[in-house]
Image (cartoon, rainbow, N blue to C red):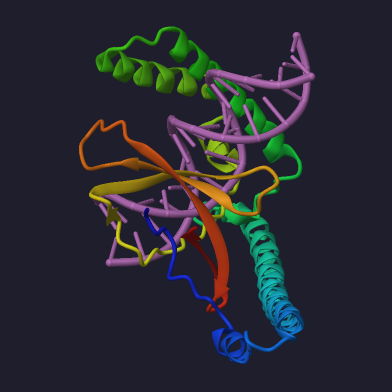
Length: 232
DNA sequence: CGCATTTGACCTGCGC
DNA sequence: GCGCAGGTCAAATGCG
């Protein structure tokens, strides 16, 4: 099994250990003591989660403050840019993607774009054949259809801005990529219904075209102010 | 700059 | 036929 995250930190082991160490199996009240121990462990876990929650809140508030500062800064820049627009600059016209207005026009136009790409995809799949050469041809065809549909309604500059903002934070894995003799590359992760632990999908990259795939259940733990995933 | 990872969108099978 | 959930794709992102 591949370890996609970091080492499992069993957390609070010192406190938990001390509790367990005092468990006296020979005593007639051992059952009662065991229950108390369970309670103590649960309390410790609760305290840890409260602490974790507090840390998350702090991180969130910091991010919010920084975001607001950046947004106001951006608004100021845009105002300055509009004021200077008579000069015909243009070098300041690049708007940071993270400040796209996702709530209105950008989203609607993005849907149009995704529709057109979907059309390209459908036409692609209708003409698909087993040969890889055809696959390549289809890719070209799809690209062309994308270009054509885009040029009908929007220019390339607009196209660049209508893409939905995507925020991704990479969690580096300390685990080796090669395990059980295969080299795995992650190609997807999915939240399972009714389960807080996501499922990660890996494909073997030892050989080109290797069909071997596997899925791994991940468990999340919070350490060093960030969440990390590891295989269960 | 290349490549691995993230993640939203899309596809497909299944139960109703 | 519809909705849902699982699996896959691929653009965006970030690290070495």
